[in-house]
Length: 351
Image 1 (cartoon, rainbow, N blue to C red):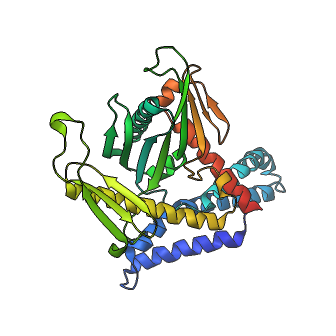
Image 2: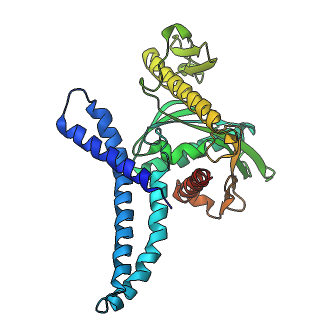
Image 3: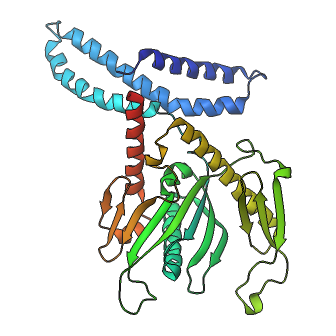
């Protein structure tokens, strides 16, 4: 049973925010109030629906003692009772603590792991998979830095993804993605296993993370080119080292000014992610066992091409439609991961 006092407190807070915005008093930060109001609105709507269902149940039970209305009440009562568990579950989900980063844009980083050229090619396949998923969602998929191999694979790619609930949908993708297939570079037809790492970081704003310029060491260097006429002859590449954390970020686009912007954007995201992980670790000693732990060393998924199979090892989900998955059909996987994470949170709250 959900505590009535908690529901009353949330409703009262929502009403306070509504009144505060209506007054337009200068002592209130309207933008902050509006954000909290917007976040609470769906919760309050679920509370109202749940409370209305409870009232309907109570009134229907009273009608059982009314000879003229008893038959109608007996017919209506089973429907209301059946609706109650679903209403309670919907309300419990609405009451779960929201990750404040869920609505943020994200920095998506993909790098090859073990497997040489095949790993780099698979990293490119993952990039296209996420790009197609972003297109399906109507998100903006902006490749900010890309280093390719001679065979068309990827050494490293960083993408800025913007849209509705980007981080909420992509945050469970962080980790090691393993592929099993016959490489195009393999003439013997043997199945190889290789891997690529994916990191999804919420975009950090200045209000989220502040960087002391004195903590930065910024170096410029000659960007690596593809050879021949493409060799870079100017010191346009930028490397930024955040001395306290040891984080090093480089960007090798043509414009040095643009490289500074990209490197700082990525550095902020990594520092923000590091701080989020520190806070999460302090809250939960067994965080590494949780879905979405963000542990880049954890093997989270296997893509088996000969069997047309995708397996997510965190929730033991196996789908035999790998072609569709590689085309960006990821909602079933992401929905299952989200539901599992919510179930874990609800179990923890019930303890």
